[in-house]
Image (cartoon, rainbow, N blue to C red; front, side, top):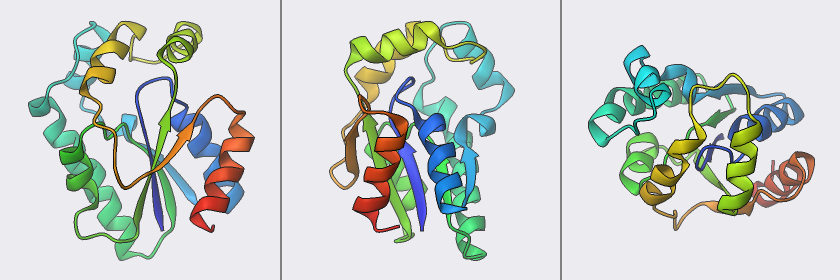
Length: 161
């Protein structure tokens, strides 16, 4: 199984992803690490990515998924995957990919982003991500208010892992 933790910035994809992967003894991959330097610079300067910016990035995440699937490696991937089309690129033809949507109140997300240090994604881009987000119909949807440990427990229970 490949679990893709999706959602906007500040939803806890990396925090929860690292804890889930550790609890399962699976690998963890952060989709942010696959952004091009140009995408990172664009976001750092306060400009949201558009669909054209995301093509190469989504292709890189899909290549990672294909490699993991080819080696039968269970893994957790943090990736915003905000639109249905992006999720289609990532999972089309891959039944082992399961999406978990980490969702939260915008006030909570803004507060988290304001406290975050050392990340290229500025809090100012949260509104553009919320506008871009197309809620998934086929994902496990979880509120991010509980502790990361509680969320990991819920994911494990609901996905049966």
